[in-house]
Image (cartoon, rainbow, N blue to C red; front, side):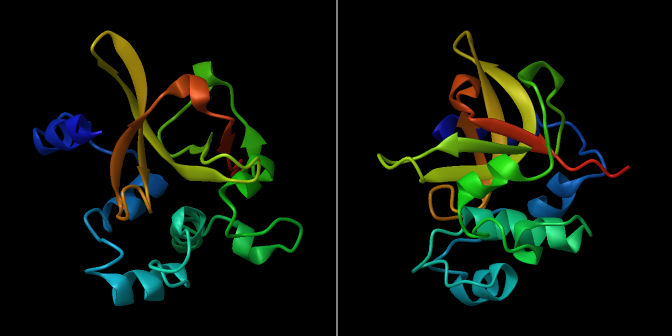
Length: 159
């Protein structure tokens, strides 16, 4: 995962489109220990005591005026896998910058991770999704994820 930091530092990411990636980028580098107060204020939970990737996605969507899981009662808003039911399903071939991607995490079926798709990059002959999210190594950052492990790609239909 350290390779993505080197790639992003070299400026290999294209200029962002107008979507939630721009909003999320403002928080890159904030860590749950050093920026605990600021993150807690932004995401609405204590990032040291709560898994906060879904809270981060909800907070970014809220800033962008996009309905999020905080505004509904059907699915737990702090569970990454709740985003499986948010928005509309997107196929891998149609993924776009700003789409919300859900991945499995841990050994329990309810556990997961969620973040925003930035782009696909090839590293050592293998494609990876570049995901911008919160609680990625306890901070807001870019990380590489195996597209084959994505359990849902979702997009809010603005129309």
